[in-house]
Length: 94
Image (cartoon, rainbow, N blue to C red; front, side, top):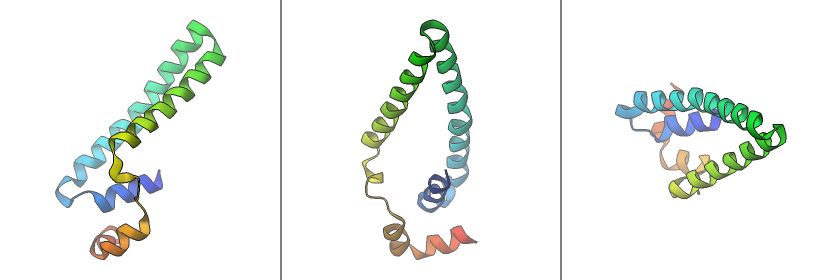
């Protein structure tokens, strides 16, 4: 979570930072509740074991989908971003 917030702060343009924080909050809060709903529904219908397995599969599938849809993040490293944009680091630290 810390890395996600740091990357969001450094990479988001200043005029969009508030909107990006709002979207992040929406998914951070809503994603948990959606996962709880999925777990409960599958557990009630198919049992606890199926709930755990399906939740794991959905999590891996969502991560793979996001990796496929955002190829710019594949090579993202703090050393490359910070070295290329020292002005952003000073603003983020302030």
